[in-house]
Length: 386
Image 1: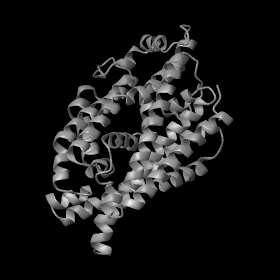
Image 2: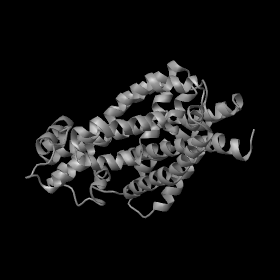
Image 3: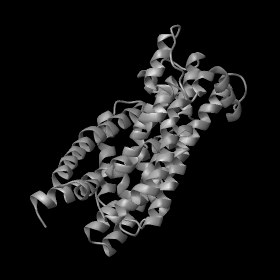
Image 4: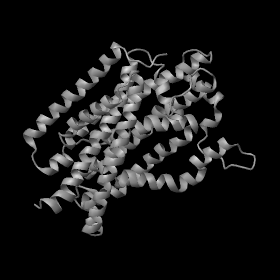
């Protein structure tokens, strides 16, 4: 079990980098020759297919927070946190049916533009500035830092700042081509993300099976998880009683059972998927049928996410409790990185590529949306009118 990368891992990563870069450049050149207006640049109007929209939605959504944070919650809570992902799939159906037709009818580029139609210019400006600060100082920084920490841990060195710089430059290059380049490179990114994530989950299950003496078999390993940690496969955390331990109380406070389903999760998902610029922007330039199909495709892909990001966390918990995993660096949030150390040479490179794909896709999507909001809702209206 080693955390350092070898030549084969770097080779796999470089191949991934070259494929995304070359494909992105080809799309960029085609766009430059045929499309020159703002709507084509920011929305790729009429040129995105349903599968590009769906893949881009997932690529923008999944980042280091999911791989590290949700895997950590899988370690701590178990499968219950998958409710966030599965309720999101239902929320996407609601958004496809009721939200998107309203946005497309109003022919908006940005969410602040919709607020202008619904309320007034002042409300739109306040929200534009708020979203810009949120995206730049909270979202971009957290994605860069958490992603760099995860990749640095796998690289086995002290390259944190260099990795952050590399991720930023890679994302910036993709985002310069506009929404069309972002969306179509996201198709590759999400393919790498899903394949790399599924490989990691498979290796995690076979590792559990091997250490617990049932053979290197994924199904047998999954059965071991259910036997060794049955409480991690409950979708509803029970309400604490007078005899509950502090750990049981902490779990309930993190995910308060039925209350989470009835209130919080719905509000979060409807706001995130239905009112978030860097999410809705993918569908704003398409016709209604294409936009709806793309959103529903994203909902289908969303069902896979718990398998990709949570099973490794539960596997890490079982191995840790069985004494087969050293102390986690960073507590529960070190669960995913710890499982990656079990991957053989070459597959570590694939997992680093999957992490990088998730990080870069989210960064590029956010940078594109930041530029859209600033250009159309601030600069064009208040700095350089017309």
